[in-house]
Image 1 (tube, helix red, strand yellow):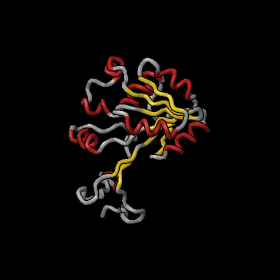
Image 2 (tube, one colour):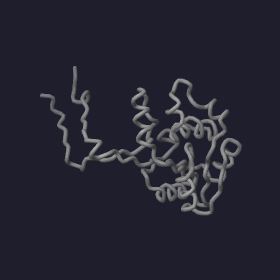
Image 3 (cartoon, rainbow, N blue to C red):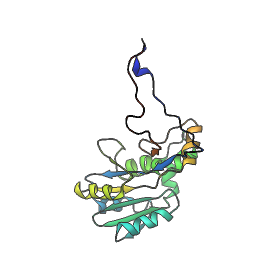
Image 4 (cartoon, rainbow, N blue to C red):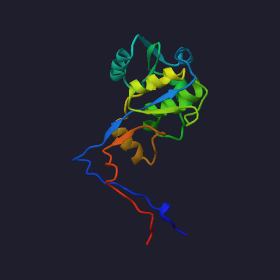
Length: 190
């Protein structure tokens, strides 16, 4: 028998008048010290070292995708140009080229499992919505590494969806969002 949990609530927004605003969702890997995280990616990525977060963020903004910024108490490290052979072996062959090129896909399928020996799940990876300072502070408190990402391009998200795929978990934070209390849903079915 159908119940209220079988129905979803949707908010339709005119994307021409109010285009989607995408924000990045950063990762924090507690217990993986920054120096160890960087050492494990050597030979798989080009690594550029920066003394402070602001320099690393500026370099990340200019870097072609896929690119990641590893950050913590001891500075930041920009990862660019992953080794194409290693990357090709790690990425799922049943996914589209567009999906395989997303920074979140590369992180989820290559960096986390292959280079760091973990999966992108709630137990191993903490999520920080679009606040780089908060991500770095959490990494420092947990003896870990912050992985700072650029937001996905709306064109990439739409192309992946049009191909029948979903972007990896926690790839982007969409806006506009309805104000709390603006849209309500009752669980009554009659």
